[in-house]
Length: 168
Image 1: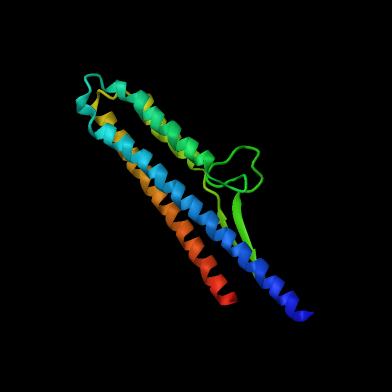
Image 2: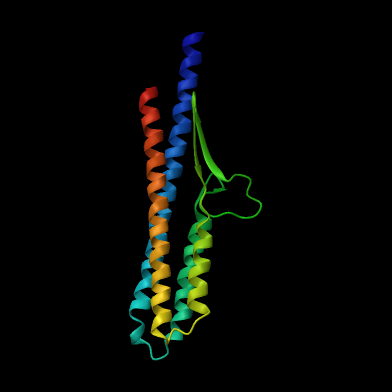
């Protein structure tokens, strides 16, 4: 009957919206962990005066970058990469549909963020203070980009929550 049909539709809509909210939370938590790796890199660069040869820092920073990338590729929902893409990934966005709305957010590829940091750290002599400063600026900019992305996912989650409340 009509009542059961509407109830099933509502149930599917709310379930879909909840999955979208969960996906968004997973991304936000992952970005928070990635911010920690960037903070570690920033601290290493800021304390580079503790190293006789500042290029010894490169290996430690590269390990933080590997951790950052691993976090990106470990961020999944139902086996789908959320913030790192591989060339064979089919979806470029996260799409959530409710009974009469389609919500979509582009999937960022934060794994690419580390390439710039890697280049500025490894292709320059860190004994030169200007190169350390350039690396710090790159880390700061990357951190800001991540913060903006996290904010986009917070907004996405709020849209889904509002839609769910309207349905109930």
